[in-house]
Amino acid sequence: MKAKIAFLHKPHDLRIEEVKLPELKPDQVLIQVGACGICGSDVECYEGLSAEGRYDLGPYTPGHEWGGKIIKIGSSVTTLKPGMKVTGDCVMACGVCKNCKDGLMPSACMNMREIGFRPDSPGGMGEYMIVEEQYVHQIPDGWSYSDGAWVETFSIGYFGIWGNGGYIDASDTAVIFGCGPVGISATMVAKTSGAKVIVVDPIASRRELALKYGADHVVDPSTGDLKEQIDKLTDGNGPSVIAECSGNNDAIASIFDIAGHSCRVNLIGHSIGRKVPVELGWTIWKTLKIKGSGGTKDFGQRTIRFMSAIKDKYDFEALNTHYFKFEDLQEAMDTAVHEKEKAFKVMLKYDI
Image (cartoon, rainbow, N blue to C red; front, top):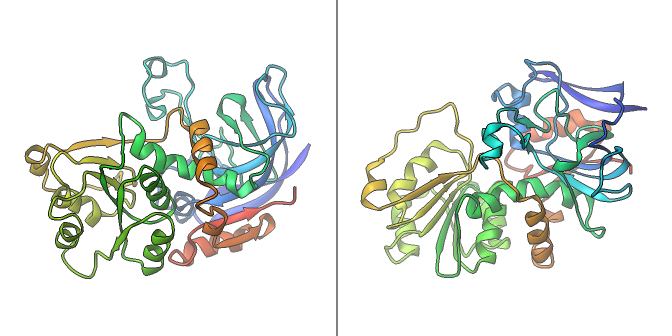
């Protein structure tokens, strides 16, 4: 079977090519893609600013935010059926190496793959994709394929707060740094818990969006002393929960200044490869609890249930600011690259 599939060969070299799909292995499913989001990490790989995309190993098919329909299943597949609407995990742990058997995060897997970032795990920027059963999750029939494409993003904000022993409830005041797709997801998660939610972002359109998706207050960090602004909104106590979703150096450094005593700090935004000067001593004197979340673990199905519970309140479809047909992939990527402030989520749509 032949299909049109995108391959990133090197920075700024993204091509749609017609290729023959490999035969299904017993544990794999063939999926016809209905929608695929372009993530900020896809943009950085395209620009040559991230080592996450492994075109050094060979051309690979991007796209880790996707929704589609199962067309065919392998001989040993038992939980999935043709016709099901599905989405899937990004970080693919093998489940059998020493670290996996120790229950460590998927990012610790000694055989880790990432769908949409490596030649051995092609993503959703193609008419069809092949994925092992263990990484695929059914979504409700009533969902759009672009809703399915939001699951991976939402799971990062959700797991970032709740995963690895985290929690939040109505007694908390949460500060969310960054209101991109992950930040808006963390905002919805925090508000659903009943917490008071403050979102920090320098972009006005994103602050306005945050107010529509759960924020009680928004703060522009460029208009004055951030600690003073946060103290004013928290009666001088500071937040009890922080979700750093921006990966911005200034935001990371400010965590230690604005955090309240015993604050639970959740580091979500990517900053690997950079050293950020921070006043780490506040960790001691404020008894801060800091945790990371490289990928997610066992949150795919939980994320789908969470999103189902709040979809009547929050319009995920409205978060997709730009739609492009798959054949217009280059225009879609150019939009994501050059219109970063306006293009909140660029979504590819396929004939299905």
